[in-house]
Structures are given as structure tokens and as C-alpha cells.
Image (cartoon, rainbow, N blue to C red):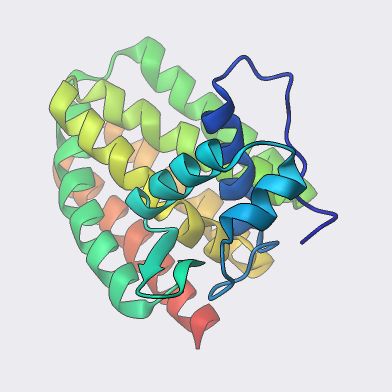
Length: 221
């Protein structure tokens, strides 16, 4: 851990947010392992900050489900569990079905072109096997659909859920054998929206999410 916690002080953010992003990235990349204690004093010394921004960062990690508080032990990195995965994806499926149905009605040709471009960026990242780029471009692809739904509450809820999904998405995309299927699934989603076919769009997004769930469960087992 000692060599891998490096803060990016170039970011124009409050110190607590820089600490949070540093710890979050370390958890998502696996530098901080499930079950590992998040000791305020040790982390503050390592990062060269006071305990206050570390404490605030750990609270934010709790809200994202990346850390949990254990009585008399303090905070630890949360485990990746099948139960939590299924809970999160059940909610995600219901909300993304709603979002894609509305996108079928409302997405402009200009935004559809942006969706195609996002899918192409994802395909290129898959070809290079760049994990962090894949995660971010997959998020970008889905966010275009959320915005096209033109429902601020729905978009906000999906974005909050996205944070809880980040580690699971990372876990899934570690498996390079999934990349070709993901590229094809994105194409199915685009085609359904382009044809304004709600039934096909619902099925495409459900298959996309179910395949993700099954892939992560295989990884966890």
C-alpha cells in the first residue's frame, strides 16, 4: 500500500475530495484490499495530511459502499459480495429499462451519433486492453442514454447508483474475454434506439446487465 497511495495535488479540489479520490482509486484498483483496515493516523501520515480530511473521505467511501464501519475496529474496505451485486443490479436494470425506453422516444440524431462515437471509443479501448479507459468509456456510453431520457431525477438516481456500481464494473472488465460481447451489446443497444424499438431496447439493456451480473459472479466464485 505504501508505494501506491499518491495524491494528485494538481486537481483543483478541496483537500478532503483529493484524499477521497486517492483512497477510492486505491480500492477500485485493488491496492487497498477487501477487509483491509483504513486507519486514519496511518493514512494521514502516508498522505501528508491531517486526520480530518481522511475521516471525511472515509465517510464518503461508506456512502458509496466501498468502506464499512466495524464496532471497535474502525473502518475497513468493504467486501465485494454477490448479495450486494444482485441488489444493485436489480435496481439498475429497472431504472435503465425506463431510461432506454425514454431515449427511444427522445434521443436526437445528434446525440445518437455521440452514442455511436462513445461505442467506438469503448471498442478501441477494448482492443488495447486499457482497463481504466474501458471503465470510464463504458460509463460515458450509458450516461448519454441517461441524459437522453430527459428526466433529471432519473439521471441523478442512476448517477448515484453508478458510484456503487464502479467496483463491480471494474471487476467485470478485468476479464478480457468479455470485451467482444460488450462491444456487440453496445451495438444492439444503439440499433434498438436508432430504430425507436422500445421492446428491442428493453431486451438489449436487460441482456447487457444480466451478462454483467453473471460475469461478476463467476469472477467472485
